[in-house]
Image (cartoon, rainbow, N blue to C red; front, side):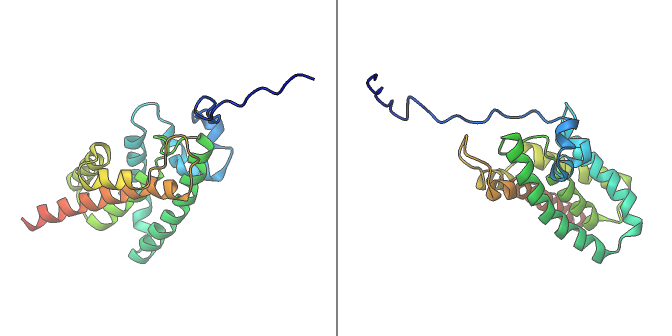
Length: 188
């Protein structure tokens, strides 16, 4: 028999962490949550997936708008937020990343809320809403930065429901900031 090896302190022997997964079309099609969270493929864009997801949301909104009443939109946003929470949590877990840039359902649901509340707006009003939303989502000034950091987990910790909600929450705050600026603009 060989003598037992002494145990190394945990600081010298850290637990293994899963390697982050690169999202792909194959990954997206493995689970319905991935399809939703990745914005039906718009989040797979190699450049600016959040912007591409927001553009997809804009197009989808324009296609659906003539067919949905205000009640339908309200229900779609509530259900879309709850389903998006689930889909974002599952997808972030499967990607082994707390807030992957490929998850764009947060942009989709938040920008739908912006468009629903600013319509009817002409093309330039919609472009302005898009630009403001992208500014608040990308730059994350003030309250958006606060919201972004509120549900962050510890680095390397498994993704939980809190982080899944956090993926959505900062974009909802960005949408609120966008709507406040538009309301102020209209008031002035």
